[in-house]
Image 1: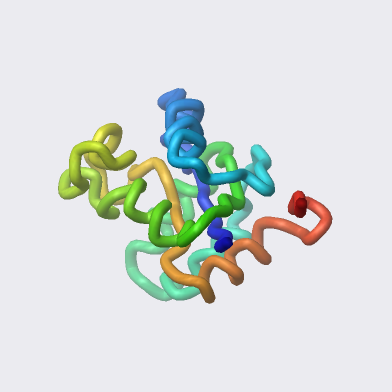
Image 2: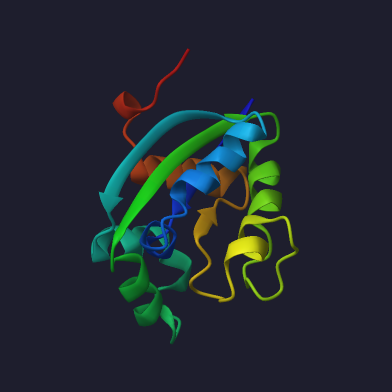
Length: 139
């Protein structure tokens, strides 16, 4: 079993798509071991997007991710990282395949509804940023 972090970004909540997105993960057979509605602070954004902070476009990214509530989730299942990323689709919604979350619901590079960790190391780092051990439900 593998765990990954998924964020339903502010645009996902503003467009009232969170139930549809969560249902897709449930329908795939993935389990949720943690979930919370929260606001991303500028400090949290800088930790989460540490590799992008020095890029010229970072202020716009920070303004977007801190601009409304997000749902942070830990999703668990076989090959969860790869499965969730495939379900999310290409980062740019205009290039994402139909049938993916972004392909079906997004037409933007930045307003792309979901964040999904891109590998085991980043998944663990991101899970540790968003959740304490006490918030994770273990069976």
